Image 1 (cartoon, rainbow, N blue to C red):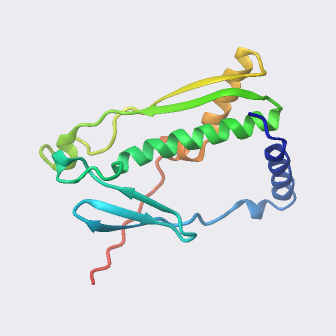
Image 2 (cartoon, rainbow, N blue to C red):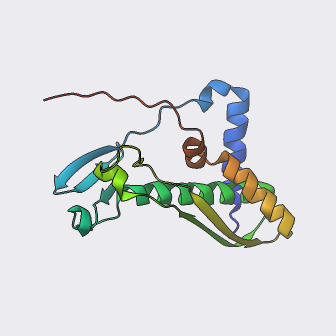
Length: 170
């Protein structure tokens, strides 16, 4: 699982940004969710990205897709795995195994508004990484720790950014 083109791409991009740091700043692509039926949402992006979410039957959905909180865990798992793979490529480490699992717990009273003292947010997020490759065990652990500290989704979850809400009534 080693791709020299990843390393080359990272090196080209790093050189371009080092020469002109302003190139590092970007506005991220938006995600727009539309309720299509019941609690089913279709999420789209500006380049035809698509995802579907739904809630379980116990909450009135039809479970026709994952719930939105699963997509958060999926984003965190895939982002962490991606950054691990990028770092491994940059360091010349060939990975034979890479699996990232993100788990959480929640309290349904929050989303249902049954107890205002209970948050609707997810509880502790637990990330488990299974990794094997051409480096020593300690080097693989350091690689994973570095990647975890540089994963955009993980960093966003740990350092919650300011959020704003605009409401347009039509």
